[in-house]
Length: 324
Image (tube, rainbow, N blue to C red; front, side):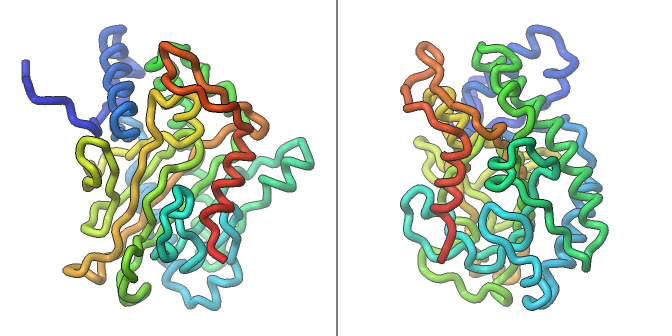
């Protein structure tokens, strides 16, 4: 037996969860519960998602991001929309009240391709994805990836329900037709974005807004940092085989703040590696529109938040990070 403390952000192999016995599942549930109480983050392996698919998405997306600005502008979208978010479109620190210059990134953003029956919901939350004609292979790659993300999200939500002791379908039953978001975030070097201003980040400090975020990231000096009460800002652990998982505001509210919405940021291009280029694939889990998020009572929950409509909350947060 080791006396070393458990890491604040552990690596969880999902294979024993899906094929192991009761002891394996109980151990994993305890590990997840502890990690989400302290940092709101964990890493998962054993997810079965082909690393080659992620590589091909990055290659295709990079070809788009390297196009002239005038070509990309034909796909320009607003925050929360579908298409290209150019430089200066977002300042994520605004969501927590941190005044920062705009984030040093560009994004391609997509979402569900299945329309809703309610025309009001459609008008607010559904618009067809806009796929760049210059990189025609991107659509098929992203749609395959999003199918895998939906399956992984359901698996994670089942695990989270079990970890809380509320049952495997407690969260997933509210996500039968979600408005999930998917961002491909490009973090180029200073030759593209210029020298960072004071207090400027590739993504400013914030928490995510929805339920579960599934992040495929690359290691870098100007990469992801997470915040914990014990350690402050720390470089996030990295495993090329793993997805980085964090919970968002809605899930934290649902658990009555038993679990914390993981605060994080992405550092600017580093002074000693100004040409560093990174790209992240970010799947933002969300609820079915109209879901009422109510805090679980004690002994699970610790704080009782006022109930919120999931998408009124999301809209307010998206509006808060929009620049201009």
